[in-house]
Length: 250
Image (cartoon, rainbow, N blue to C red):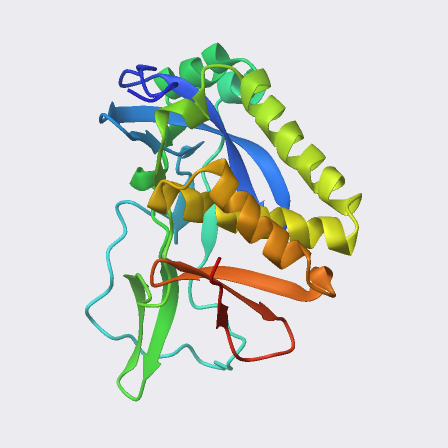
Protein backbone atom coordinates (compact mmCIF):
# COMPACT_ATOMS: atom_id res chain seq x y z
CA UNK A 1 0.00 0.00 0.00
CA UNK A 2 1.33 3.44 -0.89
CA UNK A 3 2.56 5.56 2.00
CA UNK A 4 -0.24 7.63 3.45
CA UNK A 5 -2.99 5.42 1.98
CA UNK A 6 -3.04 3.37 5.18
CA UNK A 7 -4.55 6.38 7.00
CA UNK A 8 -8.02 5.46 8.16
CA UNK A 9 -10.95 7.81 8.65
CA UNK A 10 -14.40 7.08 9.99
CA UNK A 11 -17.81 8.56 9.35
CA UNK A 12 -18.19 11.86 11.19
CA UNK A 13 -14.49 12.74 11.42
CA UNK A 14 -13.67 16.42 10.81
CA UNK A 15 -10.72 16.62 8.43
CA UNK A 16 -8.66 19.19 6.54
CA UNK A 17 -6.97 19.35 3.15
CA UNK A 18 -5.11 21.73 0.86
CA UNK A 19 -7.54 23.06 -1.74
CA UNK A 20 -6.54 24.63 -5.06
CA UNK A 21 -8.53 27.79 -5.69
CA UNK A 22 -7.07 28.01 -9.21
CA UNK A 23 -4.64 30.54 -10.66
CA UNK A 24 -1.96 29.54 -8.18
CA UNK A 25 -3.98 30.15 -5.02
CA UNK A 26 -4.37 27.56 -2.27
CA UNK A 27 -6.38 27.44 0.94
CA UNK A 28 -7.22 25.05 3.77
CA UNK A 29 -10.65 23.43 3.49
CA UNK A 30 -12.46 21.30 6.03
CA UNK A 31 -15.36 18.89 5.97
CA UNK A 32 -16.90 15.77 7.49
CA UNK A 33 -15.94 12.28 6.40
CA UNK A 34 -18.78 10.23 4.93
CA UNK A 35 -16.92 7.04 4.00
CA UNK A 36 -13.52 5.75 2.94
CA UNK A 37 -12.60 3.41 0.13
CA UNK A 38 -9.17 1.85 -0.38
CA UNK A 39 -7.86 4.82 -2.34
CA UNK A 40 -10.34 7.66 -1.76
CA UNK A 41 -12.13 9.35 1.12
CA UNK A 42 -15.54 10.95 0.48
CA UNK A 43 -15.97 14.18 2.43
CA UNK A 44 -19.11 16.28 2.85
CA UNK A 45 -18.88 20.05 2.96
CA UNK A 46 -20.59 21.64 5.93
CA UNK A 47 -22.67 24.83 5.86
CA UNK A 48 -24.64 26.99 8.25
CA UNK A 49 -28.13 25.65 8.81
CA UNK A 50 -30.89 26.80 6.48
CA UNK A 51 -32.70 29.93 7.70
CA UNK A 52 -34.24 31.33 4.50
CA UNK A 53 -37.96 31.96 4.30
CA UNK A 54 -39.97 32.48 1.11
CA UNK A 55 -42.86 34.80 1.96
CA UNK A 56 -42.53 33.54 5.53
CA UNK A 57 -42.41 29.83 4.59
CA UNK A 58 -39.19 27.90 5.32
CA UNK A 59 -37.47 27.37 1.98
CA UNK A 60 -37.28 23.60 2.52
CA UNK A 61 -41.06 23.49 2.89
CA UNK A 62 -41.79 25.88 0.05
CA UNK A 63 -43.00 24.24 -3.18
CA UNK A 64 -43.53 25.76 -6.59
CA UNK A 65 -46.92 27.36 -7.02
CA UNK A 66 -49.18 25.67 -9.58
CA UNK A 67 -51.91 28.28 -9.86
CA UNK A 68 -51.17 31.56 -11.64
CA UNK A 69 -52.04 34.80 -9.88
CA UNK A 70 -52.94 38.17 -11.33
CA UNK A 71 -50.10 40.64 -11.36
CA UNK A 72 -50.66 43.32 -8.68
CA UNK A 73 -52.02 46.70 -9.66
CA UNK A 74 -49.28 49.09 -10.69
CA UNK A 75 -46.92 46.21 -11.49
CA UNK A 76 -43.63 47.04 -13.24
CA UNK A 77 -40.64 44.90 -14.01
CA UNK A 78 -39.10 46.12 -10.74
CA UNK A 79 -42.08 45.10 -8.58
CA UNK A 80 -41.13 42.64 -5.83
CA UNK A 81 -43.44 39.62 -6.16
CA UNK A 82 -41.95 37.60 -3.31
CA UNK A 83 -39.59 38.19 -0.43
CA UNK A 84 -36.70 36.16 0.94
CA UNK A 85 -36.14 36.70 4.65
CA UNK A 86 -34.24 34.85 7.37
CA UNK A 87 -35.40 33.28 10.60
CA UNK A 88 -33.67 34.54 13.72
CA UNK A 89 -30.57 32.91 15.16
CA UNK A 90 -30.99 31.46 18.63
CA UNK A 91 -29.12 33.14 21.46
CA UNK A 92 -26.93 30.05 21.72
CA UNK A 93 -25.99 30.29 18.05
CA UNK A 94 -25.13 33.98 18.36
CA UNK A 95 -22.79 33.26 21.27
CA UNK A 96 -21.22 30.09 19.85
CA UNK A 97 -17.77 30.47 18.32
CA UNK A 98 -16.44 28.07 15.71
CA UNK A 99 -12.65 27.95 15.53
CA UNK A 100 -11.79 26.36 12.17
CA UNK A 101 -8.41 25.32 13.58
CA UNK A 102 -10.14 23.28 16.29
CA UNK A 103 -12.08 20.35 14.77
CA UNK A 104 -13.93 19.69 18.01
CA UNK A 105 -15.71 23.07 17.72
CA UNK A 106 -16.79 22.25 14.15
CA UNK A 107 -18.06 18.81 15.18
CA UNK A 108 -19.93 20.25 18.17
CA UNK A 109 -21.57 22.90 15.96
CA UNK A 110 -22.74 20.09 13.68
CA UNK A 111 -24.06 18.04 16.60
CA UNK A 112 -25.93 21.11 17.88
CA UNK A 113 -27.47 21.68 14.44
CA UNK A 114 -25.75 25.00 13.80
CA UNK A 115 -23.89 23.38 10.89
CA UNK A 116 -25.42 20.86 8.48
CA UNK A 117 -24.23 18.89 5.50
CA UNK A 118 -24.17 21.18 2.51
CA UNK A 119 -26.06 18.60 0.45
CA UNK A 120 -29.15 19.32 2.58
CA UNK A 121 -29.18 23.00 1.56
CA UNK A 122 -31.26 24.14 -1.42
CA UNK A 123 -28.85 25.62 -3.98
CA UNK A 124 -31.36 26.35 -6.73
CA UNK A 125 -33.30 29.55 -7.31
CA UNK A 126 -36.62 31.03 -6.29
CA UNK A 127 -38.08 33.24 -8.99
CA UNK A 128 -41.29 34.72 -10.30
CA UNK A 129 -42.45 33.05 -13.49
CA UNK A 130 -44.45 35.62 -15.46
CA UNK A 131 -46.53 34.76 -18.51
CA UNK A 132 -49.70 36.04 -20.16
CA UNK A 133 -51.51 33.67 -17.76
CA UNK A 134 -50.31 35.66 -14.76
CA UNK A 135 -47.45 34.89 -12.39
CA UNK A 136 -46.43 32.23 -9.94
CA UNK A 137 -43.44 31.70 -7.65
CA UNK A 138 -41.36 28.67 -8.57
CA UNK A 139 -38.51 26.77 -7.02
CA UNK A 140 -36.09 25.18 -9.46
CA UNK A 141 -32.58 24.15 -10.37
CA UNK A 142 -31.39 25.77 -13.63
CA UNK A 143 -29.79 23.21 -15.97
CA UNK A 144 -26.61 25.29 -16.23
CA UNK A 145 -26.18 25.66 -12.48
CA UNK A 146 -24.10 23.12 -10.63
CA UNK A 147 -23.14 23.08 -6.97
CA UNK A 148 -20.46 20.85 -5.44
CA UNK A 149 -21.39 19.69 -1.94
CA UNK A 150 -18.84 16.91 -1.44
CA UNK A 151 -15.41 15.82 -2.66
CA UNK A 152 -13.32 12.67 -2.82
CA UNK A 153 -9.64 12.91 -1.96
CA UNK A 154 -6.67 10.56 -1.66
CA UNK A 155 -6.13 9.48 1.98
CA UNK A 156 -2.56 10.77 2.03
CA UNK A 157 -3.79 14.26 1.14
CA UNK A 158 -6.19 14.49 4.10
CA UNK A 159 -5.22 15.60 7.59
CA UNK A 160 -6.68 15.51 11.07
CA UNK A 161 -5.28 18.96 11.92
CA UNK A 162 -5.51 22.39 10.31
CA UNK A 163 -1.76 22.88 10.71
CA UNK A 164 -0.88 19.86 8.57
CA UNK A 165 -3.04 21.10 5.69
CA UNK A 166 -1.66 24.61 6.12
CA UNK A 167 1.84 23.17 5.83
CA UNK A 168 0.94 21.72 2.41
CA UNK A 169 -0.44 25.12 1.36
CA UNK A 170 2.87 26.72 2.38
CA UNK A 171 4.84 24.13 0.41
CA UNK A 172 2.85 24.91 -2.72
CA UNK A 173 3.45 28.63 -2.27
CA UNK A 174 7.18 28.04 -1.78
CA UNK A 175 7.25 25.98 -4.98
CA UNK A 176 5.92 28.99 -6.88
CA UNK A 177 8.62 31.12 -5.26
CA UNK A 178 11.25 28.57 -6.34
CA UNK A 179 9.98 28.59 -9.91
CA UNK A 180 10.12 32.39 -10.00
CA UNK A 181 13.84 32.21 -9.25
CA UNK A 182 14.56 29.95 -12.26
CA UNK A 183 16.04 31.28 -15.48
CA UNK A 184 14.29 30.44 -18.77
CA UNK A 185 17.03 27.91 -19.44
CA UNK A 186 16.63 26.23 -16.04
CA UNK A 187 12.84 26.15 -16.48
CA UNK A 188 13.14 24.45 -19.86
CA UNK A 189 15.73 21.93 -18.63
CA UNK A 190 13.51 21.03 -15.68
CA UNK A 191 10.54 20.23 -17.93
CA UNK A 192 12.71 18.32 -20.40
CA UNK A 193 14.04 16.17 -17.56
CA UNK A 194 10.53 15.54 -16.21
CA UNK A 195 9.43 14.13 -19.57
CA UNK A 196 12.60 12.06 -19.83
CA UNK A 197 11.94 10.60 -16.35
CA UNK A 198 8.52 9.44 -17.57
CA UNK A 199 10.08 8.10 -20.78
CA UNK A 200 12.65 6.22 -18.69
CA UNK A 201 9.95 4.63 -16.53
CA UNK A 202 7.84 3.58 -19.54
CA UNK A 203 10.69 1.71 -21.21
CA UNK A 204 12.78 0.74 -18.17
CA UNK A 205 15.79 2.60 -19.53
CA UNK A 206 19.09 3.00 -17.70
CA UNK A 207 20.58 6.27 -16.50
CA UNK A 208 23.15 5.98 -19.28
CA UNK A 209 20.38 5.79 -21.90
CA UNK A 210 18.65 8.86 -20.48
CA UNK A 211 21.95 10.74 -20.24
CA UNK A 212 22.33 10.24 -23.99
CA UNK A 213 18.97 11.89 -24.63
CA UNK A 214 19.78 14.72 -22.21
CA UNK A 215 23.14 15.28 -23.89
CA UNK A 216 21.45 15.37 -27.32
CA UNK A 217 18.75 17.87 -26.35
CA UNK A 218 20.86 20.13 -24.13
CA UNK A 219 23.56 20.23 -26.78
CA UNK A 220 21.20 22.10 -29.11
CA UNK A 221 20.91 25.86 -29.48
CA UNK A 222 18.22 27.85 -27.67
CA UNK A 223 17.37 25.14 -25.16
CA UNK A 224 15.05 27.59 -23.39
CA UNK A 225 12.78 27.46 -26.47
CA UNK A 226 12.67 23.66 -26.76
CA UNK A 227 9.56 21.65 -25.91
CA UNK A 228 9.44 17.88 -25.43
CA UNK A 229 6.66 15.34 -25.29
CA UNK A 230 6.08 11.59 -25.28
CA UNK A 231 4.15 10.49 -28.34
CA UNK A 232 3.34 6.89 -29.25
CA UNK A 233 5.85 5.76 -26.67
CA UNK A 234 8.70 7.87 -28.05
CA UNK A 235 10.26 11.13 -26.95
CA UNK A 236 9.87 14.06 -29.35
CA UNK A 237 11.14 17.63 -29.39
CA UNK A 238 10.51 20.89 -31.25
CA UNK A 239 11.19 24.60 -30.94
CA UNK A 240 8.10 26.33 -29.55
CA UNK A 241 7.69 28.51 -32.67
CA UNK A 242 7.72 25.46 -34.99
CA UNK A 243 4.91 23.02 -35.74
CA UNK A 244 6.81 19.85 -36.54
CA UNK A 245 7.65 17.44 -33.74
CA UNK A 246 10.91 15.51 -34.24
CA UNK A 247 11.88 12.02 -33.10
CA UNK A 248 15.28 11.33 -31.54
CA UNK A 249 17.49 8.39 -32.38
CA UNK A 250 20.39 7.67 -30.05
